[in-house]
Structure formats: structure tokens, C-alpha cells
Length: 250
Image 1 (cartoon, rainbow, N blue to C red):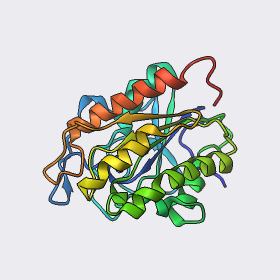
Image 2 (spheres, rainbow, N blue to C red; image 1 turned 45 degrees about the vertical axis):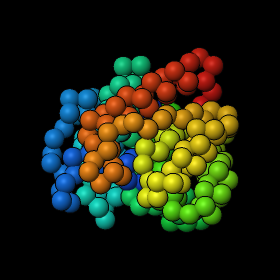
Image 3 (cartoon, rainbow, N blue to C red; image 1 turned 90 degrees about the horizontal axis):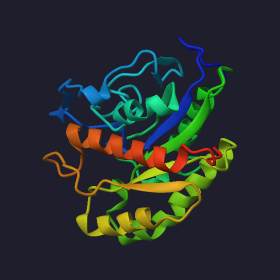
Image 4 (tube, helix red, strand yellow; image 1 turned 180 degrees about the vertical axis):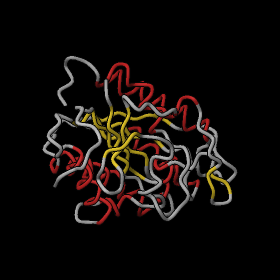
């Protein structure tokens, strides 16, 4: 699989995956994005790139998921503020957007379209022979798994299986994973149960960032633009603190 690239620079790669709050709905009203790009989400043509839907590298800019999560209007997500916050210490960054809104954890099982497409895109990102390598998977998902106790009961196993499968299929047994604990959900009574699973996950090289308390839009589901910037910074701090060390074996 060949990736046509506008740059042959070695990049540190970050997979952005999950559902709508990772894809980004900041600034989206009445199915349209307002076009407001905070300074924390600014384009950096020298240091931040994005793998588009056709597996081509391009300069990253908002919105990161516009050609990936195509059934909904995409807005600001956490990817660009994250990349801008870590680039001075990480170097040149390649973002691999894979998030799709409204998706449950069962849809990210090995063999399912979403999972297989994510792995395909990830493998394409390192196929260009430029020395690029993965730094982490950033994962924000679970709102769609807050509708029943059966979903809650299955969530821990399915999430752990997802992490195991991604690491196995990319041949990266120690791939860092930074996941987000929910700020919202479809059925409020199950949100706390999913959050407890996310916050309590005990796997090597897996850490959790808590989105609780970040400002939600009027739909009480999606983070505002400001909240997405805050989340991006929290993800950056978690990655830099836990994984950007001499002992981190990615």
C-alpha cells in the first residue's frame, strides 16, 4: 500500500479515533460549522500533517475529520490543539483521523468495517518509507454505549479487546493509548458506569483523561469549541507526562 505524500519527513503519528466528540462538533450549529478556528488550532505547515481519506498526506487544518466522518457536519475537535501543544517536544506530527460519530464499541471490533478501516489507515501512514512511527492512539468513545445495562456490562471487555487487537495488528505491543472518560451520554443514568470503567482501566501504557465538567453545547452531548481546546491540552499533558520519556518503549 503506497501513500502519496507531499512530504517525506519522518513524523510521529497519532491515531484519532472513537466517535463524534473525537471527530469534533465544536462550532457546529444547524448542521453547519461556523468556521471559527481558535489560535490553539492554528495550521502549522511545517510541523502538523493529516492523512486524508485517500491516504495522502496534507497540511493539517480544521476540520480534521471532514472527509472521514462524512455523514455529519464536522467542527473543531481535540486533534489540532493536541498537536500544537506537543509539537515542540515531539517534532513533526502526522495525525490519522478515524473517528465516526454515533458509533458503539461493538462496531470497533476486529472484522467490523470501522476497525478494519482504522487499521488500514494506520498501516498506510507508516508505509511511505520516510521513517514515520506511531506515538499513540487517542480514543474518545462511549456515548453510544450508555443506553442499556447490557452495553455497560460488555464495555470493559470490548475496550480491552480493542486495545489488544490494535496493538497486535500494528505489531506495537506497547502502543500508548490515551482515552477520554465521557463528559456526556445518551442515557445519563449509565454515563457514570461507563466513566467508571474508563477511569478504572488497568492496562499497561493506557491512561485516561477526564472530560467531565467540560462545557457542552445545547444538545448536552457534544463539547463546545472552547471545551475541545481544553480537552486537546489535557490529552497533550497526559501524553507528555506519561509517554514522552526515555523509558517509554513505543
